[in-house]
Length: 233
Image (tube, rainbow, N blue to C red):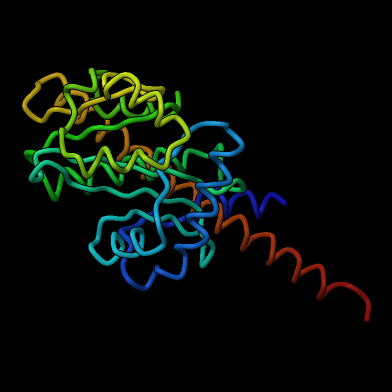
């Protein structure tokens, strides 16, 4: 059991997805839908082709434990690339509570900053965990009016169970909290730098722990082999 735990915590690769990962799309969509039902919260539904296209465009972050799906998020630009959203963050049940969501969130944030360094990054979420991660990255709460006015983005909310709240308030507010990272705001940049430093420390910690786990595993195998050799035939 301990070996399985080590695999879950340390031996998970977080990467930018491509067309070779399209086989995971249905699993991703099922995981997102199941999580939304459990939480009883709204979520913007996406089609198989939508997610697959994001993978082909290099806009998806996927986490894999070997060949097993572990987590997902994607990015998209809006308003003539002046705004970028990181969306759809999800971690499979068996891989939760080990910091994987933060790794995926940070990877999506870094990908967005790399591709659109001058864009404002925003997030709409009703989850306290995501709000905390956003704050660590340098996001600040804002009004909906501070977000993109790109109608294509807002149409993505149509599939959410709380969409009626958004329409009744004329898009002034909803169940979700709006948060924004502005690359021209010094407060955001300072927090981004701090978060990057902490992320590097965590990466080194994972690498060390993984190596330590491999050594311990080899030690157990070696001890088991020695006992087998000494056992009477």
